[in-house]
Each structure stands twice: as structure tokens, then as C-alpha cells.
Length: 112
Image 1 (tube, one colour):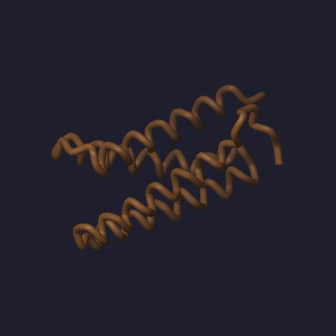
Image 2 (cartoon, rainbow, N blue to C red):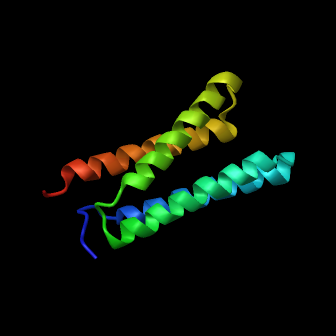
Image 3 (cartoon, one colour):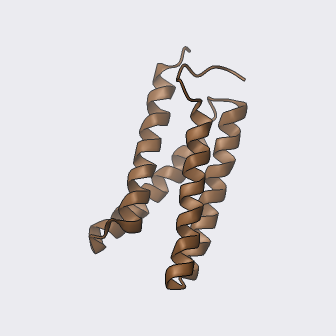
């Protein structure tokens, strides 16, 4: 495994993000009976988990994550804009945006 130069390897942030997204979908289902929340949480959580695994194998393999987090940030950002509620839309949109920035910064800071 290659060192990415950060104190905590990037894929560990990815596994944390995966848990946040998947648990958000599960909580949405348990609290509100929302099957779309469950489906979206598990779908996007699975994609984020796949990306975290890929990052653990090769830190340059970020494309699935960028697509997943960008899509989720956009969708949840629009939900927050329309509802004005922090939970869960703003939390997930913010986490997606922060993760995308973290991945982007690490891409530009790595040696070519």
C-alpha cells in the first residue's frame, strides 16, 4: 500500500463516510418508514464502500467516489435548500462536499 502523505489514510475517511451514508438511509427508514431513504442510503453507501476499498488498494483510484459524492452532495444540497432542515440533508451534503474536497486536495498534492 502506498503512503498518501496524510496522517490518516484517505480510505479510512471513506469507510467512515460509507457508514454515515448507509446508517442515514437506515435511520430514515426506521424513523419515517421511508423506503426511498433506505434504498438510496444502501445504494450510495455501497458505492462509497466500493470506493473506500478501491482507495485502500490504490490511492489514485478516486473516480467512483467523486461521482458518488458529487451526486449525493447535489441531491442532498437541493433537499436542504427546499426543506431548510439540517438533518439529514445538510449533514450528508456537507459530509459529501468535505470528502470530495479532501480527495481533490490529496489528488493535487500527490507526486506525479
